[in-house]
Image (cartoon, rainbow, N blue to C red; front, top):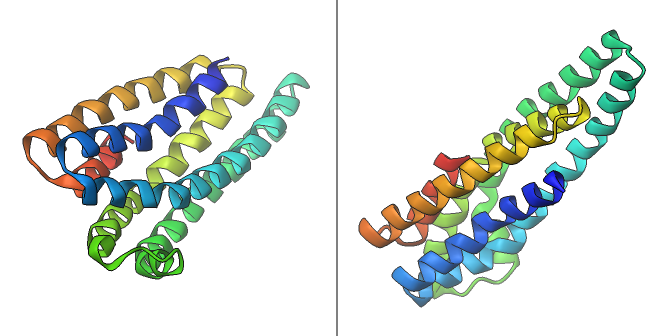
Length: 183
């Protein structure tokens, strides 16, 4: 149940961004957020899939009380998430316009969508980090800590979305900045 709720909270980032941007920043900004969702979901699902594999290994070694293997099973995904997070962040930020061209984003929202996606991608390393740490905690039998962290981050995201989009009028970019800070 904590894993399921955590995944729901993680997907709420884009949903909340869409709701707040749609209500306070207009149709073009909402379209920028919405059109970015499949790309964001793909990367998030990839990260979650990779970390689930490490959760299984950590849990097996921890259950067998093989602490040397536990340490290795923890350090390997942490290193991978750090290096992978940096590489994917750099590539994603650089390739955002190409990705949006490939999915045929209309010209009238292209700049807004590019800005949103690039800002969101700047936070990927934190997304990788959360998922890596969450996998480790779950592998060690602690599914509550990752859930508490993502619930807190979700509420921070909602508050910052309202602040940046509704109050400061930053549009879709404000929603992306809120998400990065929350993560």
